[in-house]
Every structure is written in structure tokens, then in C-alpha cells.
Length: 143
Image 1 (cartoon, rainbow, N blue to C red):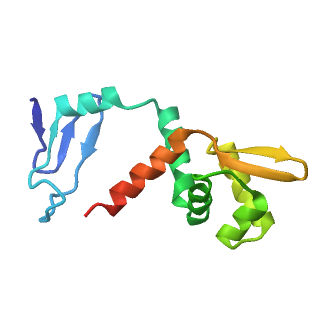
Image 2 (cartoon, rainbow, N blue to C red):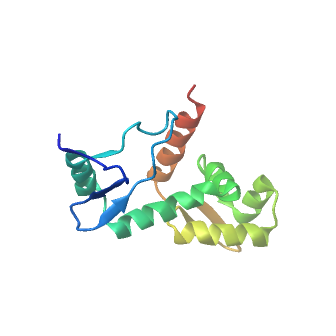
């Protein structure tokens, strides 16, 4: 594997024609004791990255799971659909506040709505949402 060590001032010429500066190595277990770039590994990582726009879409998707209220709404819809009033009772918020959160989740294609007379019912948009939440829970509950 091709490696490049940084010189004493902490810089190296990279493949893209610019100079990068690296901070001096720290004496902790989270960083290398020597600063170098494994060019083959970096190139492999760069070649496998999703396109920038897709990475931004994925980050936006996961931001919805980062909000405790939205996460509670998503989790409450996993077993079955609920009307807006039921969701408001589960999360302990007003119908108006819940409607706003549901609108955000619907725009993110995490939930879908169905009107039945004067009531609107929400459900998880597809099984992938449940899988993501299940995997996250398994990960967090690991010891």
C-alpha cells in the first residue's frame, strides 16, 4: 500500500494539486502517532462514496430520526396506522404541533397519509423505515 509521511511542518502534496496541513499528532488512542496518508485506501474510499447529492439526501433522511418527537411518532406508527388525534395523545402534544411534524415526515417520505371522512390516518411509508429503526435500536442496545 502506498503511504506518504508528512514532513516536519505537517504538510504533504496530495493527488489533487493542493497542500494539506495536518495538526501535530496527539498522544491519545483516537489518533495515529504518525501522520501519513495511505493513498490506495483513500482512493478506494473516494471511489465508493455515493454522489454528493445522495449523501445530502441520506443525511436529511437521518435528521428526521434525530428529533425525539419525530422518532416517537415514527416508532408509534410501526405497529399500525394511527389518526392524528391518536398520535397527539401518544406524544403528548397538540394536534396542530403533531400535524406540523407529520408534514415534515411526509415530505421526507417516511410516513404517508390516508383520509377517511373527517379523519386523517398516518402509517409508515415503507418497510425500510422500520428496518432502519430496528437496526438503530439493536445497535444502541448492544453492550
